[in-house]
Image (cartoon, rainbow, N blue to C red; front, side):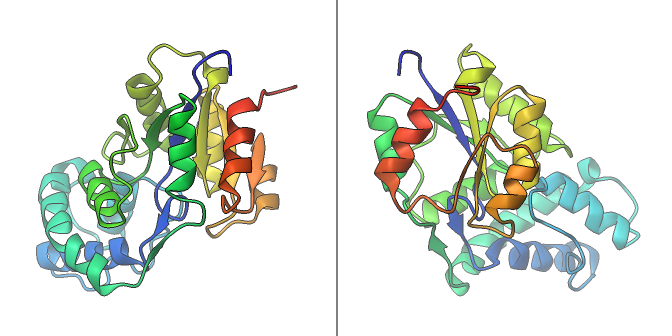
Length: 229
């Protein structure tokens, strides 16, 4: 690797699976604040930013005010409830972690996050599953309704002036891939979520994995891949 590679990871269904703890805590927080049970029951979470998810629930519940107006109170309630939800729900770290992160870090890659999670929610999830400490910042769900803007923020935070072709965005949804492409980055799809590797390729992924169980081979491929080569 002649230049530092920047690798930005999604969290849910990419690094870890919480057993629905995030959605459970969000529903409890929404009920506390607005008196609406199952406020997120009909909202699609996969690949969306938490700000977008909150906006969708507010609109569906016909609650006055936008997500920015309610975000501080909602995040406070959500992150207060999330630790208990993480304990209550049965989740796990995805195959190949943390070994893949260790390999990439040892090789000199700069590792960050490009996640739809609110930053405090991301911290709580990563600490619970003992993956915190691997990441040099990132972009988070409070940045924007649009995932592409979250990725842009992550690149500004983590890439330290690297060229877009040196930046990889790793995720399990087409939204991760299209957000990477919108920023000129390399889209890396992993089929550990709700989408197959075929669907991720169709969304434009440059490179795909079923999972990262073979972490040494995955690390080598991530570190040496060159678009168009």
